[in-house]
Length: 276
Image 1 (cartoon, rainbow, N blue to C red):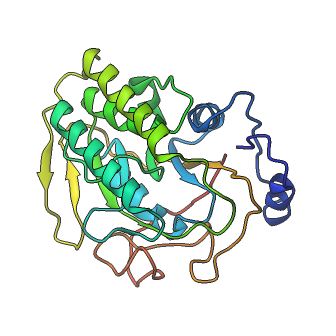
Image 2: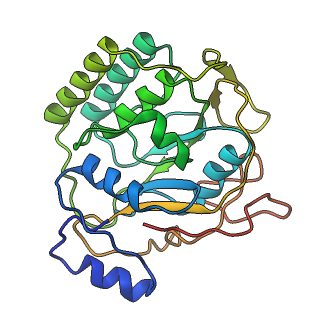
C-alpha cells in the first residue's frame, strides 16, 4: 500500500522487487489502507504486517502453518510466551494491557495482546468481519469481530523490534480513546456467529509458546499466500540481523522462529509470495 508517500518509498520498493504490485490509497488512516490492500489481494491467505522493519518476516511460516493446521485467524502476540517487544513505551504497554483485559472480559476472548498489526488469515474471513474503520483501531476491531463471528483464533508469539525507518503516527491517548470507543460500540452490537462454533478454549502445545484457540470444523486447505504490506513514511530497508521480509522460518517447536533460520525437517509451504 502506498499511502501517498513523499519519500521515494515506492521507487525503493520497485528497485528491491521489480514485480511488486503497488496499490494507491485514496483515503486516509491505517484502517483505510488495510481495507484497500485486502481488496487487492488475490491469494487465499492474507498476511498483514507493518513495513517499518519492526516485524520479523521469518515468522510468516509460523502464521501460515497455524492456518493450514485449521485456524481461521492467526493473531500475532508480543506478550505470549516466546514473544517480545523492543519498541513499546510503558504507557502503551499499560494501555494495551487494560484494553486487552476489557476485550477479554466483554467478549469472552483469551487474548494476550490487542493492538498488534502482525496477523494472517484466510481471505474468506473478510466476509465475516466486514471492516469499516479508518484508523489505528482497526486491529482491535478485527480481533473483536473474529471472536463475535465464532472463528477459530490461534495466537502466534511474535517479537517486535525497533523500527528501522520512519516515525510512528500513533498517539497513545488519542488512539487509545478510539480503541475504547470501538470496544464499547461492538459490545452494544450483535453479530451472528457461524453455526457450530463453540466458545474459546485454551490449548497448550508441546512446543514452547502459547496457542490460544477455540475448535471448529474448518477445512484444512493449503492455499497461495497473499499478503498486504503498508508502506510507511521512510525508505524500505533490510535489517542486518533479520534479513528482511523474504526469509524462511521454522514452525513453533523447531527452533527459534523469531530470530533463527530453518531447521532440518521443518514443515513449510512450498511456495510463498507477498502480494500487496
